[in-house]
Image (cartoon, rainbow over all chains, first blue to last red; front, side, top):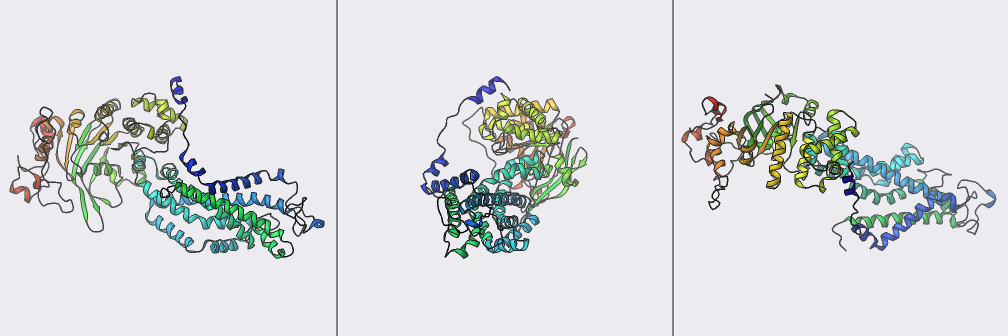
Length: 292
Length: 321
C-alpha cells in the first residue's frame, strides 16, 4: 500500500449522531426494554459470581424455605435455591431463544432466497410447504412436533425453529424477487458468476435487513415458546433449571409455597416484556410511516 | 470470424400475444474488430446482446437461426457451457454503471471474486490482480479505490470498474450496451478511448451498442443499423455514413444536430416504431419512409449489396435504389 493511500484513509470523518440511535433513545419504553435485556444478559453471564449455590444441588433439609437473606427467592421441594435456578434459567432461556431464532432466520433466508431466485417449480413447492406450516397456530404445531420428536430441550428447539422458519422464508423471498431484477445481479451473471454464488454473495447479504428486524421481534416470542413447551413437559426436563419447567412443577405448590412458581413466572414475564418492548421500538424506528 | 449471427429470430410471448423482437437478423464480428450496432430505442439492440449471452427472460424464445461463436452454435449449448461462456469469453458492459455494481461489496472484492473464478487462483492473488486491473482502466490510486464501495465512486469511475469487471477474464468479445449514455460528454470520450485502447492492446472484439452515430464514426470499423428488430443496413462505417442507402439510415444521419448551424430546427423522423405484435407484410419502415413505392407495402426487402468492388460489404434492405 502506498503511503499516499494510507494518508487519505486516515483522515478522520466527521461524526454525527446516528439518526437511528437518536430515535431509539427518544423512546423511553424501548430504553426500558433494553435495560431489562442488558440486566438479564449481565446476570446470565455473571451467574456463578452472583450466587454461590449449585442450581441442581439437592438439599432436603432446607426444602420449601421461604424467601430470606440466605435464599432470596426461597427454595423448592428438594431444597434448591430458586434465585440460583432462575439466574441459570436466564442463561438457558435467552440462549435457547436467540439460538432458535437465529437458526430459523438463517435457514429461512437461504431457503427464501433459493425459492425467489429460481422461481418456478422449486418456488411453488417451497412456498406451499411454508403455507402448510403457517396454516397451523404456531404453539399447536410446535407442541405436536416436540411431542413427536420426543420431549427434551433439543427437540423443543428444533420444533420452535421449524415453526418460525416460514416467516423468514417469505421475507427473504420477497426481497429476492426485487433483487433478482436488479442490474448488478444480471451483471454478475454476465461476469460469469454461477447462481449459487450470486445467491450467497449478491442476494442474501442485500436481502437480510428485514430478516434481521424480524429476528429481534421474534426472540421474545421464542423465549416464551420455549418456556411454554417446558411448562407442558415437552421441553427441558427436570432437573434442568428452565423457567417453564420450574413453573410447571411449582404451580402445584402455589397455595402453600407462593414463592416457588411466582419468581420464575415473574422472570419470564420480565424477559418477554423486555424483548417485546425492544421489538416494538425497533419496528417503530425502522417504519418510515411512523414519524415522530 | 469470432461471432456470427445467422438469421436469428427472437419472440417474446405473453398471455395474449407474441412479439417478434428480432426478425431474421444476421451480422458478424471479426477478431479484434469494433462493430457498432445502432438504432433507436426498441430496435432490438439490447435483445441481441442478451440473446448472445443467453440471458433472455423466460418468456423469450429463439425461434430461428444460429449464433456461432468461434464456429460453434451457442444456442445448442447446455446451461453449464453457456455459463462458462459468459464472462470468460464474452463480457458485457451495461448502460447504467450506477446499478451494475454490487452496492454492499467493496470494489476490489468484487473484482477479485470474478478474477479468482476465471483464472482459478486464490482470492489473495486475485486481489492483487484486481488492483492491477483498476490501474489498467486508468483509475488513479487503485489501492484506495479497491477498498471503496460503489456509492463512493463517480459515474465515470464506476463505468471503469464495470469495464475492468467485464474484461477480467479477459474475454474475446466485449458487448457494450450503450456504455456512455449515462455519463457526461467529457467522461464519455474517455471511456470510449479506454475501450478502444483495451481492444487494441488485447485484441478484444467489441460489439458497441449505441444510438450515437458520432461514437460509431469515431470508434467502429463496421456498423450495423437496426430498425424494429431487423438489420436494415450494414457495412464499413465510412461507406454507410458517407453514402447511406437505406432511408432509415439517412433519416438517422439527418436527425443529428447540425453543429455548423445551431439555429436550424432539429430533424425528427416522423411517425413511430411500428407495432411489433403485427409486423406489416412489406417493409417494416414503409409507414415512416419518405421514398416509399408500392412494392414496399407488398414484399419485405432483403439485405443485398449496394456497392461495387471495395464497398461490396455494404448492404442494405431496401427496394428503392
